[in-house]
Length: 257
Image 1 (cartoon, rainbow, N blue to C red):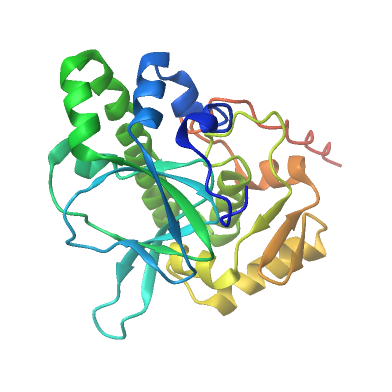
Image 2: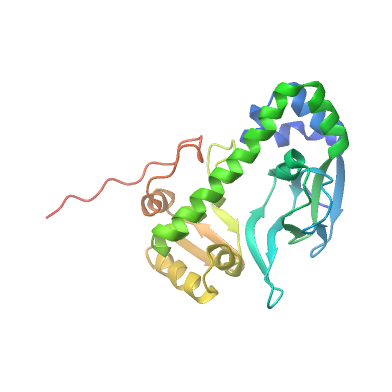
């Protein structure tokens, strides 16, 4: 979908249903979200919202990508928490607790975002209280992902953390309904470094090792996965709650001797 052509929200249901969370919501909630939504177009570098802004609704990327994170207090650089691509929903925490935005969301390229205004969807949810559970499920998935990332960074070697992050990106953080994970990821190395809390040089060294093993190929601002089962093997066991769809089986271990 091109950011230059603005679709009517009600035509988006088939595409939105390629996200596991949205597809699992009751049809009434799916329709309520798109019927109340408007499409926001952004140029590269435009903010969708900034930290401290009032909560103005639930969001979903339709085209392009957004960087979500905070600003370093000393040098002003952005520390990435998430890199959000189609058709990922976000902004649910502020919808639930009615607090201001806790992070920045900045367009990484020309992008389109579906924005569901808080007063409109909140009123509908109050009339259909069982569907608040679905909003809570979206928030819980993010919390589970963040806790897993924190544990990975604290306990696993970098090469394993990197393999796991690449798998997360290739499967839409476990939320894509597509049967086959993406093989080409638009993911600049400095973004990976920011999310992992290490230098770009450190990430590049680990990626070059994977490239020598023919697991990935490195391109400008992109990473191509060549050996998906090999990447799964290097990632190790992943919480099934983060990957409802099974990952490709890792190759069997070579017999000793």
